[in-house]
Length: 149
Image (cartoon, rainbow, N blue to C red):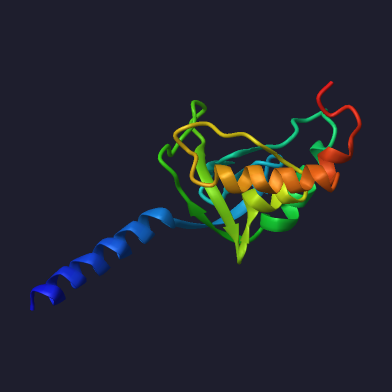
């Protein structure tokens, strides 16, 4: 009997934790750039752990286009980390479109660089590994000769 009560409590806690991680599903109506989108309710979402080129910089258009391909007019799942908003009031999230982890996909293809801001570090090691692979394969931004000049 005691085991059943403890096990039931464990299942409830795990369910609550998963609900907190994937607390939102929403429709993306607009893509601002490679790492920021607007949801149907007007909420701006900034992708955690990555940074894509700003307007006027090399690969801005390509990163934005890839982000649009992955999320525009699609329902996405938002996973949250320790910090839920940035200093601009945007929601911070890891974004999933179907079975694609969008943040990771953008790094993997060389459209984004790793940009870790504690306390949101849940996937930092994965992002660093993907960035290393993209750099070694000269994908996307990594194909540019003067990326950091």
